[in-house]
Image (cartoon, rainbow, N blue to C red; front, top):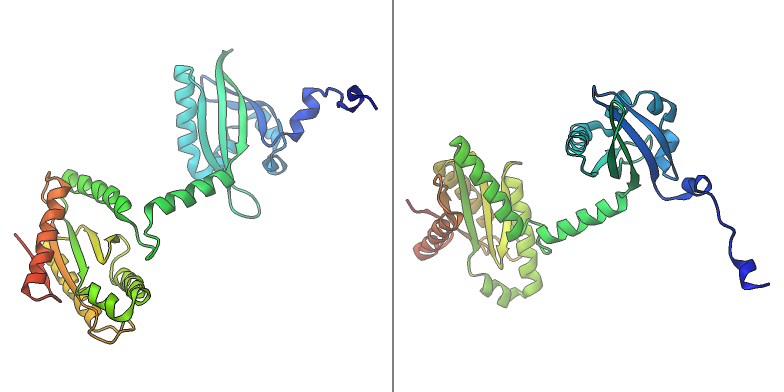
Length: 299
């Protein structure tokens, strides 16, 4: 057999399209908003569950159903692309009859057409890619020992809440928590037991908070709790309840062997977050100076 005999014969595009891992499409939208798919072919599993004949006649209602909660985002992207004749690039969740929705990426180039705009492009299933992005994002935002948000996630959340607090004039308070004599605990019981205390404290603190509150690990044995819509006095009461609950709990090293010093502070409209954290930190060290296992606030 010669080398030329081993080379597959060229195949037509119509033969190849059903085997590609995605969908090739031509989409038309009139100036009055009517939509249809002039062409829709490919190897995507989603095509098995889609009424292509209906999409070729009038896609408006079916597009709304298929994109579900992502419909406003999709329509905004289409409108922006049509208005500025810029490439269409977006993603949406496509429901499947069985199993979880699949993430679909859309990439298309617009061109003027009679009475509207026409896009030629591709739709690709990126479900695995989105899952991997989510996993990596979680790794970046999560403390590996306790599973709590880390400092990076905390600061992004606190920045967002402080902006809302300043805009709407609502209270926002924080607690700084530190485990008393944690080095002695590690020296006596070992680092594995110390790690277990940190994990149990994370679980116990979360159980005492509201769903809208956040507890994060700042590093070492230090944690921060962020409490939106919470004035200073209410934050102080909650901090004391947390302190008492921890002091009465057996973390595996005996009741009363693990205690907390807590500093609390309330956000002042417009102040830098570094100032807020510094005030809570000073209150924390005030609690340690008083004798530990207590809550302190500074005006």
